[in-house]
Image (cartoon, rainbow, N blue to C red; front, side, top):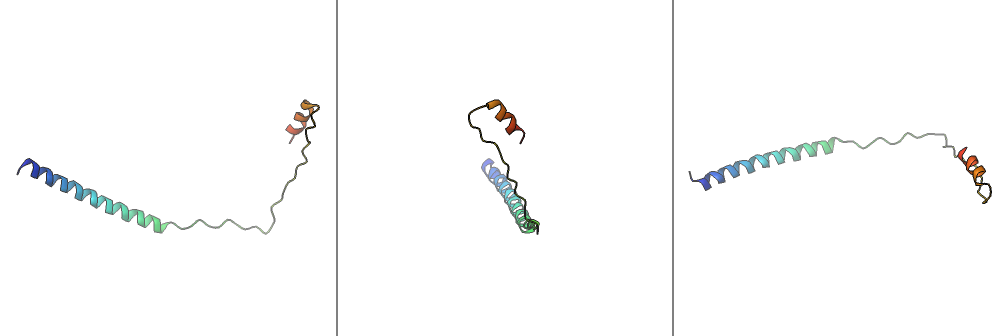
Length: 74
C-alpha cells in the first residue's frame, strides 16, 4: 500500500468516526431540547403588592450635614 493510499484510508476512518460522533451529539441535543419543559408560571397572589411611599426631605441648599443625616436614616 502506498503512503498516499494509507493516508487516504486513515483520513476516511477519521472522517467516519467524526461523522458518527456528530450524529450522536445531534441526537443527544435533540432529545435534551424536547425533554425541557417551560418554567412554571409565577404563583399568583390574591393580595395586591403594597407600595411604599417615602417622604424624603428635599435639600434646600442649607445645612448639608443635617440633610445628609436625615436622608441616611431612610
